[in-house]
Length: 64
Image (tube, rainbow, N blue to C red; front, side):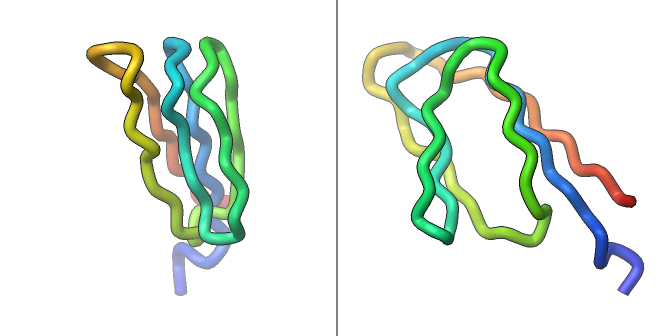
């Protein structure tokens, strides 16, 4: 498939007590200026924050 080699980058703009949960059990906390790069096919989900009204992150998909 044409998207076999895909990486995803998450860039957290602000710090909150939320983050991202990955299917392998790893959790990454939302910290300002943090960049996380992982296999783009790995399932992941948002962990909702309770300390801020908004959580700002940029999602970048990279086809290699």
